[in-house]
Structure formats: structure tokens, C-alpha cells
Length: 198
Image 1 (cartoon, rainbow, N blue to C red):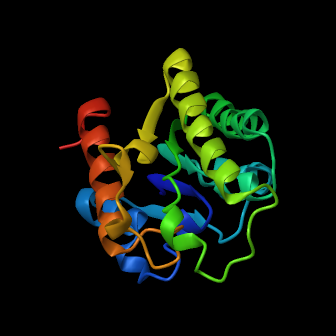
Image 2: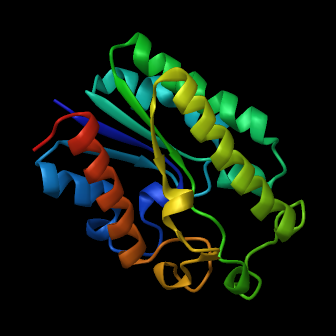
């Protein structure tokens, strides 16, 4: 039986990092959970919502961690639409007695991404970064209002007023092994305090 499904994009699929160092694998080894990693590189929250029934509901896990939104912003999808998609998945999970956790995506390491060779976002890079901060705030507020656990990776990757660039790959978008370990540590602390894991 699956204990936990991790639903997301490349931040969940451990892009360019050995899968054993991704946060889903680290959670599995720490708690001895049966974890199903459903991260797909490049996916949007609309794509995640469309496969939520097959990937999550049919697996009947105890928990689902939902992390997405950065790819949506890359293509100028409004933050309010992203929030709606994320919480539609959370509502489906709750209806099926699956406990949801929603992640607020990490920020962009702006000084690196411009040189990474990626297609730049439809809005400007600055606008995309600003919208990502707005999305993180919206996710946090909606989680508090609905009593859903929020894993605030956006805040985690900040130190004082700057982004922890040493936790990123050279592209400035994806965490490196250290970044994934920090994400896993945040989730481990939250699971221990809120869901009483030992």
C-alpha cells in the first residue's frame, strides 16, 4: 500500500540530480514510507490536476504532497488560477480521506537563470519572480484558512533578504542535492510535528 504520493513537476522529479537525493526518496528512507514519486518535468498545475485521479486517488495513499506552479508562471498563467488548481487537488484528496500538504515553490535565483540557456518566460523574468513570491503568499494564506499543512519552500530558500544560491543547480531554477536535503528536512519536521511521525 502506498503511504505517500508526491505530485509535482521537476522540483519533485529531482531534475538533474540522482533520484536517491530528491526529497521524495529522502522522505521514504527517513520514515520507511512507501512513496510514489509522480513528478513530471515541465508539468503545470493543470496537467497535475488532470492526472490526479489516476496518480493519487487510485493509489489511495495516506498523504499527498502537491508542489507546482512555477511552470505555469513561466507561461503567464495567473497566480489565482494556479492556486485554484492546487486547492482543487487538495479538496479531492480530502474527499477521499487523503491528507494533503501543499508546497510553496522555491524562488528563482535570478543572477543565475539568465545565463542558463533556458527559453525565458513569456512575461519578463522579473515579473515571473515577483509572481512566484505572490503565489507563495497566496498558498500560505489559503492553507491557513482551510487548515491544510503548507510546506513553505519559498521561505526556506531565502536567507535574510537574499536567495540561497548555493542550494541551486547552475540554472538557478532547480535545487541541487543540498537544496533537496533542506526541502526534505522541512517536510520531516512538519510531518513529525503535525502528523506525529517518530
